[in-house]
Length: 174
Length: 174
Image (cartoon, rainbow over all chains, first blue to last red; front, side, top):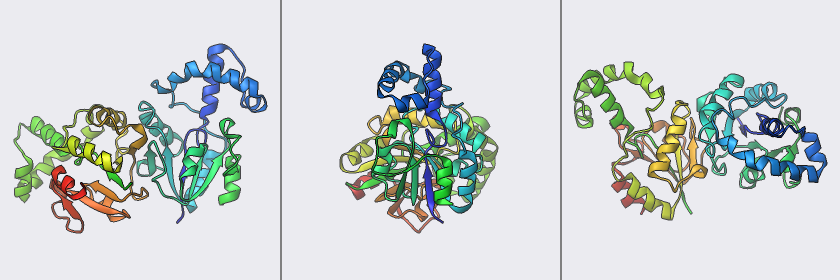
């Protein structure tokens, strides 16, 4: 059985959307992913607003109510029938997130369970046939096939096969 | 640089001693590791006392004040000079333990940091040259060299190279 490592933030969970909502609530602004993708100047302006809010990722509760990425639940359930699935999240940077991320997984992906959940920093020492991740750094030293999950922050990366959605992953792997 | 995976419970941290203390405090008993190793009947009696207390491993606080394993601090610091070290703890079974284990590591092994800390269930997909672990299940499917850290519960295992202490590890790897 082939093994797939699946990242949480910005792959299973729409963490960028939660951050956008946080920034918009704080500044009474109306940023959207579409606007950020379309306009480099607005993207820079958004980053300046986001940076002073970034500490809130370390606060209790932040990771407990991240919205699901569209179609993630449906496609991961199908992948689970044909592949060995490990959820691999670089979560140890946010110690308060660890229990919250586990509870989040229990809510939406209860069949994965603690045995197949990995909270780590680097991912390069974990072996699998595929990794689905939004960060180039996690694909560069990966020894299997890396699939870059499309995100606002990775539009400039061209070295890896890009998947734009869970429907894309379904077509590719199922 | 060769990579070593180091387990926490009963390798870096003397979790069995904390459990012994918990049982002794609860039953006003005087079990010691030495007695449990020496006498199979007392071991069985101890297990009967421990089982109804086992739920306390899931409670908040349990993993925050585990005593250090003798010489772990000194020898891990030396290994860190010559090897790439990842702490790999099967901690996702105990979601409340995750932040506590991270804080514990920050106290005693602050140089390891979040990038080299892994909380997981299975360990078989993590590749390294060595794993130091007290559980046979984590050595069986490991693709490098497994070193079984001596513990009351693994005295019967003969399939792996046994290390009796951190001083043993120092002699072997340094």
